[in-house]
Image (cartoon, rainbow, N blue to C red; front, side, top):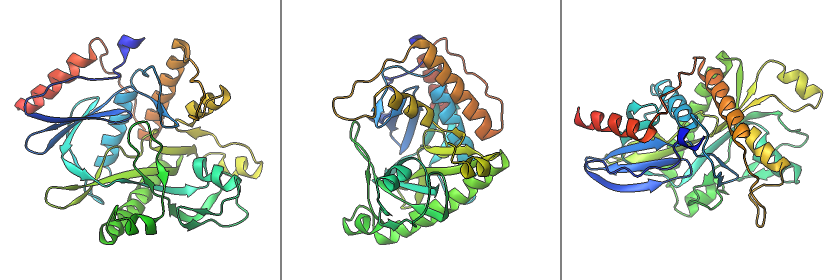
Length: 317
């Protein structure tokens, strides 16, 4: 199984100046303000990276994000220049803002857990009484999180605190907020056209050398977003049944049922090859549902060489 995945890379591209390893992506900085972002097959849940990769996961995330960037670039400028390989995106180097703009249309996931624990304020946003899990909010709310370093947990933070602590200036934050609402509205429309509900998602932004604020990283992927199937949503809510969803929540639920939530002293359960195969199949299903297109599997014979050849071809062109 492991040879069918790429979980780490060690490239040395011409003009390379820096290398950064995120939870699932690896980013190579090159001269001329170019960035090469490689989506690996690593899987992260509860801010913990699982020991084994998931076949095709990097390709799936990269291709969904690329498609969604193309589908929203009329609204919000983004960093993307090219995708020379199924797992690779090349773009403009940016200074990332150290916040994730999380936006929620429904009370699910983290918000529902906090609400159940009795909290009626999330990241400085008041939550109405009388909501139940997966209910729609009167209007979408933005609940930002600070960007954690590898191995740390992202932390909820209010807009006021972000500005007060100087993480983002008030002027820039207003742009991030505006872009976040616009992207979520478009993402929700795209989802609706595929019979899906975009429940919540996160966006990341950066500033280019000339000071333009652009969308970076991934967008509307199952790793950064939660989707419900629209059909039957109302009936399930009225019967207090769990919603049928499309996100990596199924992995989180599997971990929880095996006694793991990323907490101190908990042991990571072993993912068998059979289970990994099912996760891979779920990701392909996610891709086809979210994009409305058939998934075309990339060649896994030698993923590293394939990526390197494609990137070098692009750089030489």
